Figure (cartoon, rainbow, N blue to C red):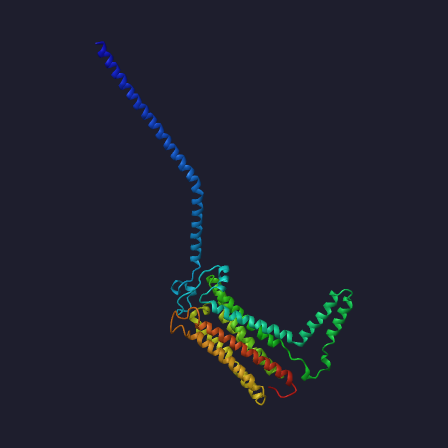
Length: 395
């Protein structure tokens, strides 16, 4: 009995130890698992601390790139069908349009290729050509050249040690006022007025510059588009009016009444044309032919004084040169206007001439050719009047 009880007790103790051992293993395993889980979480947190800034940077960069793409997409060139109604002018130019661009972006498009690039640059280059011609002719005027030379000789002693500024300035004043004695000059020796010539140059520069500005910034907004189109048309009218000043002034210099009649007549026509073109309705493409007719009427009104001048001066040798130059001018303007109205060649092949070679670019080139031809005719008129003067038979 004692032995059996002892064996039973030993068996229970053994089972208890095994149970405790298993329990301990479970506790240890649970503790180890808890520790392992805690370590994994800490490791993940540490990794997140390292990765998070990198991810933020990547996200910011991606967002910035997305915004840039979105922004650039806003300033992409558009097709004709996607344009706002106020910009739909030539249905034969199908692509490469700018629309609703900010002023700054529109300005930088001066150096970007689109369907207005050559429209801008043709007249912008022409503007700088006429600026150069104006400066050249100003320097060649004897009074201006003499004034510049005397100013230089007067200012140099002031920069020289020991120079007498007071004496030099008085000498400069007396020499300048005494350089031209109008009272001792005969009528044929009087200097020929240069202002009509420079009025023409100023009108040409105004027209070419306003045209370039219009084509550059007309893509900004409807309001600015309408304003710049009116300014462009005013520039054309101003150029036509001022082109009359050199021939009408120099040909009829000895008949002032005809000067007043012809110059007054073309100026009145110019004012009437400008008032018409400032009306918003006439700025639309619907009235393109009407605008062309107004400009042609102004230009062809010069036929009457031209015939008058030929009758008065048929035997003048310079007549051939002036008629040739003026005929080239008239032919250039008429040809350019024909391209402008008919929209050739893009109407024959829509989409082929979107960037280069369309009618408006050709029109611009002929305008510059006509203005340059008239410039050379004006030089002949000035030279003739300087040589002939008023006492002799007029041109």
